[in-house]
Length: 391
Image 1 (cartoon, rainbow, N blue to C red):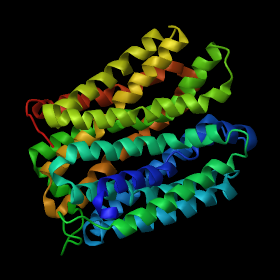
Image 2: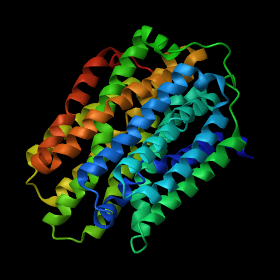
Image 3: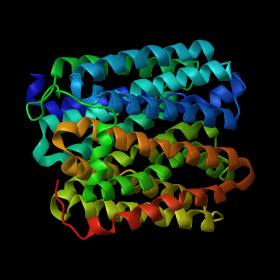
Image 4: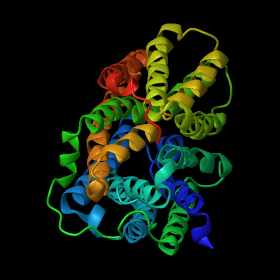
């Protein structure tokens, strides 16, 4: 039954599994009030997840696990371990050091969920990778937004509840993928392998251009997502509105990336993944430049712009992955994607650190620290934009 609708099963599992990613951010206000964490502490916990993810992707890429271990098994094991570590955070939340280690371990587990989810999609639907990966990254986006939704639904319950619910979702993801297995279009295991095999893909010009565009996208994306609660709180205060609405609005701003990814995947079949990625990156880059300049505009207008930004900032991600999947060596696809993810997510650490550390002093001006990402990404992928790559 599962194999009749493999893409549906994979994207649902991606949604459930990636609910672990920003699970702590979803209860950030409650942690500030009940545990005494500062904005800087929340930024450090976000960075810890990113660092764990980078370490994990490097480990599975350089060790060959991404291509030598059955993808569905690695995904399932990672989701189970991630669920356990995420729940364990509750017991150490009042100790920033231990909490940071717990979030780092969560990031390690996510390295077995997101890149392996991409490989599973390609193994089942290789002929429409751009559209299929659009759904996958869309569900990643919804998964990252889901902690804000879980907090909104449990606003009158202790802050521990959204974390436990996220862990339950991750366990469900493990079960779905374990039962589904690997698709017929890639071997379940790759023979041989050597450390850093994923780097060989960078010898290919098109893969390199797609990866560099992706790196620019990464510099902006997660830092913006980390800023969303701060930006929303600012506008609610200007409206003299209750801050209880912050969770719901933050969820909408991040979750609107789901239709952005899905529509981008659909458009990629007509206009090519490269063109769609270029337009999306240019749109988010323009908002990055414009938003601080109009910070005095009516709050509802700025929230509307945040929704547009949330739509466009992630829409290019799946198309970069589709372009990379199409140009990487097939026998090392898992390692190449894991390596690209590791480098890209490495760039999220300084950008998140900058915006969260400087927010209290610079306010909206911190957004300009994100602008180099889209600018350099657009420059890197100019050659790809002239192609009509359909994936």
